[in-house]
Image 1 (cartoon, rainbow, N blue to C red):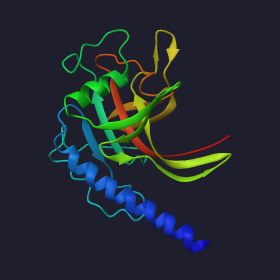
Image 2 (image 1 turned 90 degrees about the horizontal axis):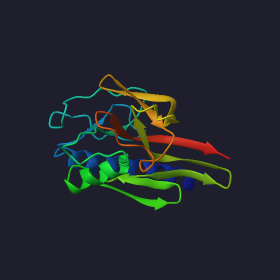
Image 3 (image 1 turned 30 degrees about the horizontal axis):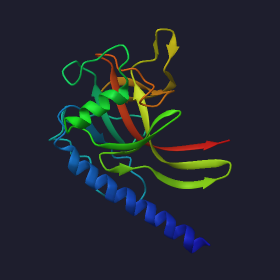
Length: 192
């Protein structure tokens, strides 16, 4: 049993290392968003993914232990932003322009992001009552808009800008010109 658990953990570490390496290589051509990493990598990850000299904005400072981030500020140059535009709509416009790659599935709860720039969600453990895994989370500078609370108190800081963890997925977060958004790859755990 211990050998199987060790082999599973080793496979997860190798997968994360490979995904991080390839995602960072793709990020160098990113013109509309900022793709950055920090030195706090998963155990066993020895890839050199902290070289941001060719990425927009240069070196970014990431706080709160988050691993990989794709961040952008919404503007009318990328797409026409209306009152009905969502972060997902903006992500689709970035994808159309070749500035962002992502995958996911649409459900009754909205769009669930499973991969960004080639880095895919990874389940570490799953039981009938709990889940632990590396997933993509949505962060935004929007805390409340038109009486609706879009994010909680948990936040990360990227280049001095405080972004709050969204209470909604990308398709449920409004896209507002001048507001900032981030897709953050982080370890999440939940029980029910």
